[in-house]
Length: 296
Image (cartoon, rainbow, N blue to C red; front, side):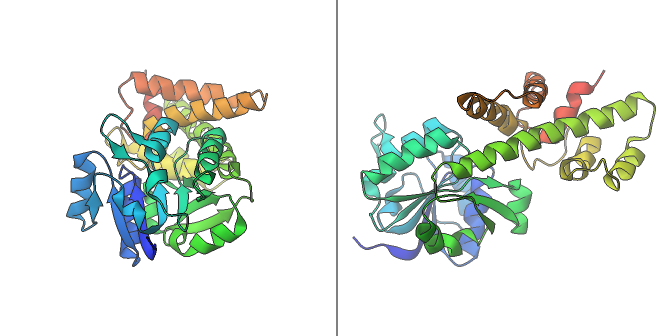
């Protein structure tokens, strides 16, 4: 069966997956959003996005995107679910299609997925993203893409509907490695910003004045400027990126570093603060609310 060049099967309609799929759809691509759970499908349908419970649309899609939570879900997406009889993408996809893995699952998981896909003659791109929901909505998402150059070139128009493609090399897995470095920096910077504003409060300073002063000087970071206002806004700040993401990703970065025999010094401290936030019941809150772990 021939594939439709403009047809995208997008598997995973979670907090960031749904706005990504919607942005592609509104950019003119024929997108089918796939999710096994009814609630995200209902949200997608309410926005006009065609949806399905199983990925049968992958039979005719030229591009199949996977945006799931972890490596176990990635494997299930590729191989299918024997409990429900749901088919896997590898059994459905045409060799003329390209599998784009946009989940943050680590280099080993993506390399394993690519090796398995190659048995079916399917090309893979490793394209984790950074920028969160805010980046998706603004069209400024940054995609850390690795894989064969000619394959990436063939799908650049689809990806660029979301933002900017950063070419990270020809090797599958290097996009994930770039993302590991990114998440190391992000997690440390968020916690550093939270600690600094909490120290300011303890010193009896006006936190908003401190934030304004630090945001214009050498001490500024993107995370301080972006997350700082939401830290001061409080527990109900709009969720752009949840605490749960950094609980997962700090563990993933630690695994990646351990596999390279690299001793991380800063990450464990940041990971501990996100773990404390989880213990406070903040997993679903904006990651800026790690600042609550400094409350007296």
